[in-house]
Structure formats: C-alpha cells, structure tokens
Image 1 (cartoon, helix red, strand yellow):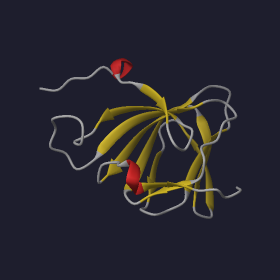
Image 2 (spheres, one colour):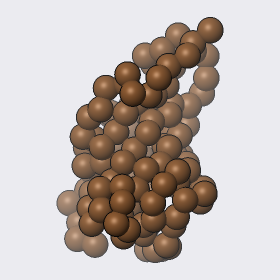
Image 3 (cartoon, rainbow, N blue to C red):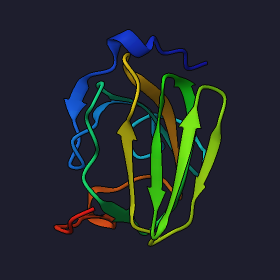
Length: 123
C-alpha cells in the first residue's frame, strides 16, 4: 500500500512558474498507473508561463478562481471546475482572485521534463 502526505512532497517552482508538489508518478513511485499527479498553486495576480505538453492534462480546481487559456480560448474557472487540456495545446492559467489558486494536475501519459516546452510568447 502506498499512502503519501502531500505536505511531505517537495515543493518546487515548475518551469511554467507554478508552485508544484509532485504527488504521484509511476516514474518515481512503485505504482502501475498510466498518469502522474501533482498539486499546483498560483498566487494571487500571478500567471503561469505559456507552455505545452506532449501529453494530455486535466486540471481540477480545488480552491480559488482564475482564467484558463488553451490555445486561443480563454475561460473563467473556479473551485469545482475540471479542465481538459489536449496534447500539444498552448496553456496557461492566471489567478484572478484574492487567495491562492490551487488545483490538481493529472498528466497522461505521465509527465516527463522532455515532454514539456516553455514558450516565449506574449499573452
């Protein structure tokens, strides 16, 4: 049995500038799953850098509100929303609220650094 406390997962600043804790990955943990999962946080007024993954991704918003961008689409998002991000889509999320925007990131197949591209484009 594998049980983890997210508070014990290392907190890092990811390439897209989100504050991230990788929770579960078959590349690091002894689990046979086809995805990885992380907990992300974007502070009030902050926005992640535009980026794309070769994998599909799902965000599940746990707390806060923001604006999600996928390619040329923009949508307001808030607690309880699930967002599907197709592979190779340009994505970024902005915290438009007064408290941290906190969400789960589920990446399938599992996230690998070489599968992510940080973009230098203006939004």
